Length: 141
Length: 118
Ligand SMILES: Nc1ncnc2c1ncn2[C@@H]1O[C@H](COP(=O)(O)OP(=O)(O)OP(=O)(O)O)[C@@H](O)[C@H]1O
Ligand SMILES: [Mg+2]
Image 1 (cartoon, rainbow over the protein chains, first blue to last red):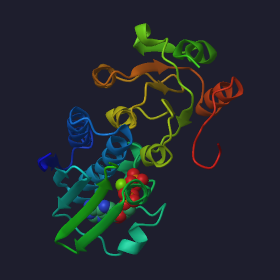
Image 2 (cartoon, rainbow over the protein chains, first blue to last red):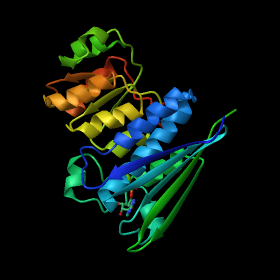
Image 3 (cartoon, rainbow over the protein chains, first blue to last red):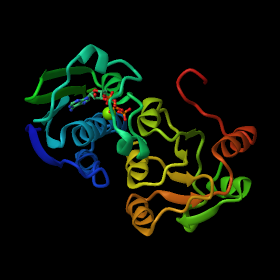
Image 4 (tube, rainbow over the protein chains, first blue to last red):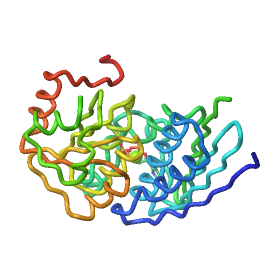
């Protein structure tokens, strides 16, 4: 299989539409016939990342690369950046505001979930410039 | 447990998917925090929640859940029901509060199957 590259823009501000990119990716991965567990893990990582881009960074872009043996998801935004990544990675830490909380977000579980469901995760962030969360999910052969 | 049993136990009303009540679920999850739902997935096919917004449907969809039940008699708008229909997820509403709804299902044999308690 050739590497498949998918790009999904993520609109900022609108929490009602948030999650569309993840839904689309999930459908594409299904069509590719990937194992259910891989699709589920990739979908959760992408969804958490997508919601974060909307809540914390006014949108961004997700790039997905599907290979025979792995999926790489790169979620990039030009938001405020994360001041303390170690703290952000802790379960329960959240700076989400009232609106996000009313919609069921702000448990401080998103980044820990991404870590839990991926095989590798990295966060590059610069204050005032933005954040890129990269996730690798292996496809068992 | 079949969705039809769940409907009866909770005295729930089906908002979409009456024809799919023969679907079988083996565990459930109840939460108002979406990341919390996403944190402990095994094969919960049923989501009970007091939140009413499209993200509930999207969260359930990421986990390939079969049914969402809105507790405390909450009735979602048509756009939310349609979103669930598109994703083939049955939607119900039940008058019970979260605690009671979960307790009733649990005591009738539907377990949580979350990390740490199975
Ligand atoms: N893309 C981002 N840009 C800026 N800050 C971010 C970004 N992603 C996460 N953060 C920061 O890290 C914190 C923790 O993120 P995490 O996803 O774990 O929790 P949350 O989004 O607050 O709540 P939940 O994901 O449970 O709904 C956030 O509250 C926010 O302060
Ligand atoms: Mg989050």
